[in-house]
Figure 1: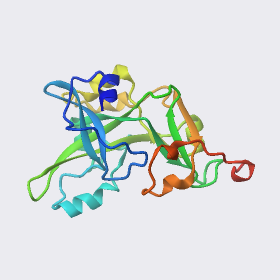
Figure 2: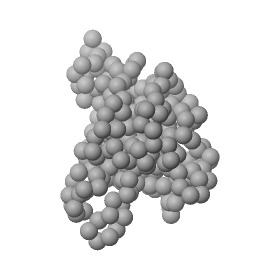
Figure 3: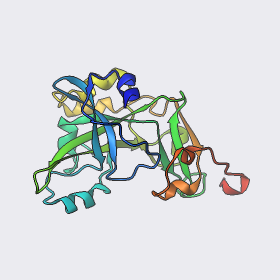
Figure 4: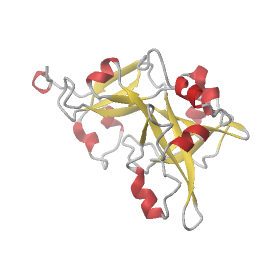
Length: 231
């Protein structure tokens, strides 16, 4: 938590204690988000998978989250689940890296996992996201968030067709500003000339495919070998 506060030059934190280290985050897990509030740019947390405002009860809301972990940048301003949060409650989602699984359209064996991170060791990625607050039938407020994705480019496109939208530092202020509600401006902020700049990829072991597995060994390099690579 302290590293994120320093890296993103935050004005404070709304998180009571550091979240457990997690190398295999799943839908509904609590994740860090960075957002604006009355005191400035702050660290907060949210459940991964955006909960739409119309859900009637906790069970229904929780079950919906696995279908709303990602929002497509091309249609986020139109989709009922995401459009209000896109206009009013945007965030950054800091991450050391993320996993992607090879599709049959690329040059790697289908479902081979890859770990993608910054080429600068220990540098956090700043992923564009949205968040919202949903009130359960008991009156409890639950914050949730989703990652914004776009069409993959470069080396990433040889693995999967999608990639996160990354938000460069010089756009953080206007992206996080809840008063900025101009759709065309928000869409333009997600458009980067080189969206995969500074990223490196490496194959990792299939152990990450089981959410019960966790620990730093999940991001260790994994040798594919000649027989495992498709050309």
